[in-house]
Amino acid sequence: MNIIDLFNLSFIDRKDKIAIEFEATQLTFEDLNVRSDQMASVLLAKGLQSGDRLGLYLENSLEFIDIYLACLKLGIIIVPINILYKEREITHIMNDATPKAIVSINEVEGIATWSAIDMAEEAKRKPQETVQCKATGDSPAAIIYTSGTTGTSKGAVLSHNNFIANAINLNICWKITEADRLLLGLPLFHVHGLANGMHCAFIAGATTRLLPRFEHQKIKDECANFKPTLFYGVPTIYVRLLEKAEDEAQLIGASVRLFVSGSAPLPPQVLDAFHKKYGHVILERYGMTETLMNISNPYVGERRAGTVGWPLPGTSVKIITPEGKEAGVDEEGEIHIKGPNVFSQYWNRPDATLASFENGYFKTGDMAVVSEDGYYTLRGRKSELIISGGFNIYPREIEEFLMEQDEIKEAAVIGIPDKVRGELPVAFIVPNGNLDEKALEDKCKKSLASFKIPRKFIVIDLLPRTALGKVQKHVLAKLHSAE
Image (tube, rainbow, N blue to C red; front, side, top):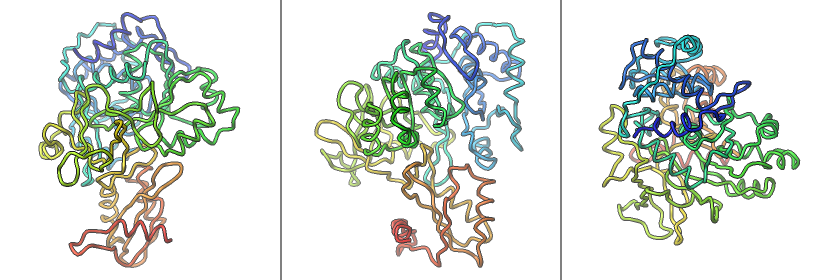
């Protein structure tokens, strides 16, 4: 079985039900089925076949959905790309995944680009010819890139079975049904919006209002008009929602039965403040690009502040201490995961794949403790990962770019706490002579996604290092606090 077989529960059995609302357009499940069949004809005419890769560099849109579904039907492997990425970042992904082309609204310099608008127009002229998806559960469905601690972005290969296991778990554990109405402003290039949002809704037969992006200024009107029952967000979104007046909060929360938070740790004070203002306890869960969802607070039962809950069905979780032993109650260690949700490999990186698994378990790099009654609490990251507004930032990637600049001798990047974004990157610079911070910022804007640009450049004479030459980033954090 492949994931299209599960989508057919709605594409065929619920064909007349509204599946997607996007801006002024409403599409039924049958509409989605027909449109994706027509788009599949376009892809075939362009010479794509099963096993080929196709990059998607698109904001949330109907074109994204049509092309994505067409790829799944044809066995083409989708490579979704963060819309905030710039040429430097896109080029690395293109060179690694070697897709036939990249689909975008705009031309991507130096890369074979197909216009999503032109493809949509061509698809309208195609007759519907039902596509029989020949992918198996083990067939790769997507390669989604997640940065590594070395700064080199790695592609996690996710199979149809990975996506199926994730969707079935969430639909059962969060009681998602065809009666639900999902307001989705998270990006579809990320597994949070794609796998937890769109996949679950399509299988359950729920109606989704897809937003181009989350805009907190418009959320009251969206909720008043659409009356959602489900809302997924990252902590930054919930911080924004806490800024709403009491009457707005009551309107936003009136129809919602479940608010979910993920992609970054939710501060306990945000959960408590949201409960007081909105009357809802946010359900926090824990997942990764490589594993989709692993652990979740219960839908029925205590959603404990500061924790991510219990392992989802079929998911095995161990906490391993630095000494390599399985941790006891309240003993800190690294989370190791095994289950049908876990990816198979990093694309073209057998070395990284081998290093990421131990005794059949994926080593997440996240530190945690587990309570006597089974609730997991994240303690931080084994790596130096910064999570800003739900986006992963690896300091090494920014450091390498900074070190390419002639005016910089040394650079180190750390994350600092931020009430809205969770964390923000800050760069410590040892310059070669005088440093023009504005010019350096402009260089960063041209080559790095907006969320990766350091919010501050701090000039110092020397980076603090250990006797072995490793930069002492905890010292830099103290320097920043003192400043």
